[in-house]
Length: 325
Image (cartoon, rainbow, N blue to C red):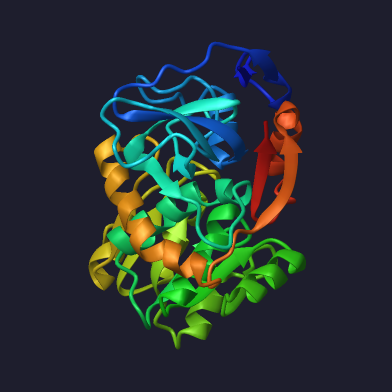
């Protein structure tokens, strides 16, 4: 099969389309003929050599895909050859075929094309496992999402609104703010021209928001704590702005704050299966009802993966970027 290979750690041009061996499936896995895969920020970090795949995972990039099952392992009874599926992966999506544990597969939601479904697994499982399963955002509460126009952000806006929350976002241009508003965001803050802490306080009568989903890390850490309400929860899923910061514990004690962090990729297959099951049960009906929709910025051939990475790193996109083998 053909797959994108990192010739050496570095900038986007190190990505090369090469002929490689087909994956060999384990007893609890299926083989998927990939119809589409989607970019995630983690892919660019792995390309630079800073985010190696978990032990035993595919060495190739790609944390999600959609496609058609070509083979099933001997212990797999819930899926059949020919089924159309999408999946979260520990790696391997940037290829013509990929092996995936059966518990990490989802059916294609009604109303979504097989190709577009590749944009959903990673954002759905990330947002649901963090904001809802862990930080317990509930109806009537407020959520602040940094990077509202990203793949994660555009999905979080829609599912949080569907669940009855009030949604705040930050983004860096009027165009991005407008798209977030169209998706349902209640308060849209341009982080380049406004202090998000002040705006949050202004919009919440000085109280702050209940949950924050953050991928910026160090530069926003203290400001995020200042933006939280009593019993507020900060959930970090990345540190694109910096890894190291200081903490004044008094800011946690005073408002009974909780700081949480997790990724999706390094969780156990069993843990991922629990998340996937909840997503199918709770999130997929929202997609089927048209209340949550894929937001896709561009489709590119797999051979142009380097171009796709450059686009993602430019931050000029809104929503997801898909690669088509």
